[in-house]
Length: 376
Image (cartoon, rainbow, N blue to C red; front, side):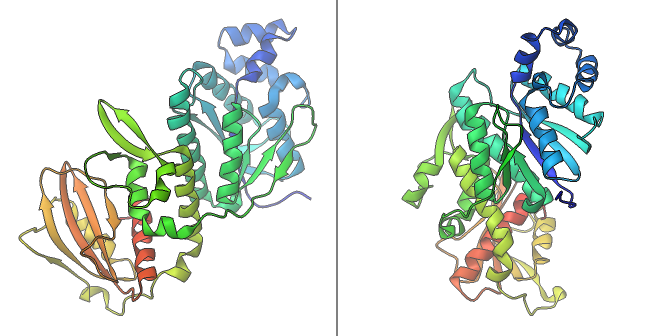
């Protein structure tokens, strides 16, 4: 029985369709491909039977998913490689599905180029391409909800297909695949992930910093040895930065998703203070610097468990990511926040209604989530 709920299909895309056309006996299709006429080529392909092998793995698997599992789908997101051929195939498939061929109707079709996902540079493929694969799928999960997303991991590089399956397992998303000689798609149901949430909760601030990239210096940035396999050093314009590895990115995104589902049971009760009683206090002449700090802090005060905020540090020449963390000077119920603007940094302490260490860690993770989503 087909499902009636709206669904989002995320499809990894390869370039085998080009080989199918070049190796076929259909001269008109070859000419359209070689001339880059994706409008004409998409129209010609829509005239072929839906089961035609020449149409390639992506079209056959996507139409198969719709026929077997879904009554309709709101959107199709095509994840293509960072190559000229990848962009061409993405454009071709978008034109094909935009025309709403029989059995393959989507309200919208989007093409996302996964920067770094190219076989020309294996290191960039691993460090950047696979991380961006995790990011694109995770962004769709945050936007639409895991229950509304389905991954079609049929097309693309073998490593990309395999990693897409891992992402589905980690984020609790159903993943489909169609073997070349099968006429039906198979579904791999999401499995529970046996990672320890406590590592992410204790170091959520550092994970969010590493997601952006943290310049290497003499400061100890990996307080837990368990994190060593989740990070790697990259060179950017001659400067060394620590960033999440593809596995680290998957670890981070999976726990962001898990925390979002569990946070209501982990966060402390709302503050008993009336909104007007919540104050922003300044110390040591920090004032409202940088200029955007006051508005940022006022938005934080609206979070139910926040009671007051105290600024205590300002440096006009220090640029670091916006983050919330536990530091040596914070106590239970307190989280230190960093705000940066145009190379200037302000530090402040958020006083919450948390009464235990676990509740405080949950507040820190929640504040990091909200900040990363632009809610402050």
